[in-house]
Length: 75
Image 1 (cartoon, one colour):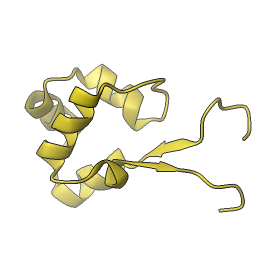
Image 2 (image 1 turned 90 degrees about the horizontal axis):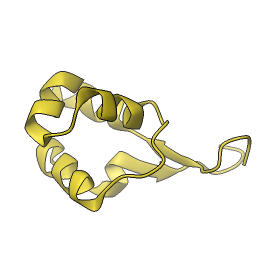
Image 3 (image 1 turned 180 degrees about the horizontal axis):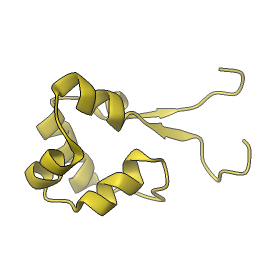
Image 4 (image 1 turned 60 degrees about the vertical axis):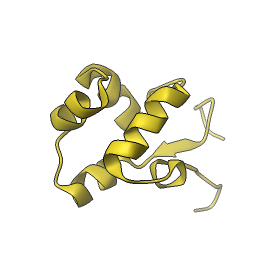
């Protein structure tokens, strides 16, 4: 790994675009602040609660693997 302490990438941008949804709309539906979702979206989050992950998956109609993936070296 590089200077990051993790290799988890968040695919929130792609899911929002595919659903024609804004971060503000998602925030209202999930019950998480826009600031916190922005931190997650930009890969700066250090943790995510399972309850938040569950709500995101419910609202975005996805699975956790659609939202989070591990970056592999050389890819």
